[in-house]
Length: 207
Length: 303
Image (cartoon, rainbow over the protein chains, first blue to last red):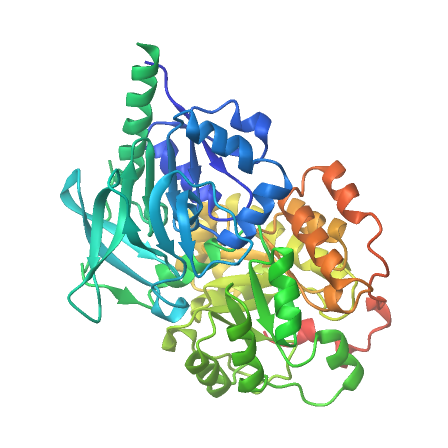
């Protein structure tokens, strides 16, 4: 099978770190800012960044609808932090005019873990990556407040102030989202997990 | 496949990775100076990735003279309340109590800034003592590395704030990039002497020589007034830009702010920059830096 080509939405955010992580997970990675560039990739990563800025730029430069169309057609997408917000069907604490790509039947609360002083890193058990906890960096991070029936919860974090836990990683079909930033660590297993999703998708499409 | 050895699986706050990682999320973006909640909203509407809360923009600090200090906590809190994007605020160089106050207010980044009047002419603040990350200015590589050695998690080239003149921003960014390029060419034997010359820790110098970049995010500041200025700094290697007086000292701040955001993202596309530059109204009136008296050069503050 040929190596999958995975774009990183390069409107704003930690694009370079995702390009490195994808390359280390044996994908061909390239930045995507325009609809023409999107057409040339098999899959997309929406990086961390400021979701309000990213959303605005995606609308302004005409990539929001093309990404939505590709998502509807089954393109695999992985979103981290702001990228998770972009993949949510519903968001809380966003700007009133903030649009998302959508696709995952979930409600995501923006900046739910607090401001930068509350940002943290932690080990997290991640379903499917069972050899060791994934190391997650949470920066003004969102969490998933509610998920629909078709959404698989991959990771949860115990809440600091009670018995509840917070959903921080989900998958629905070809869409993957994490509250945290594996691209800021040397641990690229979540990216490798996504690359496998892309390979399986391409193999199924070729059949 | 490499896996990070996790020293602790328990949540840890205020680590270098969390502090530097915050700046990574700002890359490709514009951070705008604002003096009240209304301006902060205009900045957020325009697509700023963060705002810098301060009492007077640098152009007014220049005009008014006197001692420039940390802003009123009420004003900072109003801005934090008004927007959902990150809020930064400035402390004076070496004034670690102002920094403690800013941390207690919950700002997302502290700028230990030469734009305010320095409180200590020998020492900068110990930035490892804080959970809140710091950004610091630098005019050259040695200065940048000394700030990182003190715990800065982000660097901005200083430029000359409040002038609307990009010449010093260009000079400082080029200086930092050129010195990094020179380090790349040195062999291991030469790095010790280079560290001594840069007056920076050897380990940091070696890291920069290997990475070919700073170990933290590098933005540009001090003099950006137009979309083309912002794109210029990006093409010269800045990972994003701070815009101070350039926006709210111009004729149509909302329009100019949005235009600078566009040009910062599509910094390598002259057509987008051209479109962003149309009909922006009056730019801020600039100052020629060669007529600035030495005492009014903010970039000289800090060492």
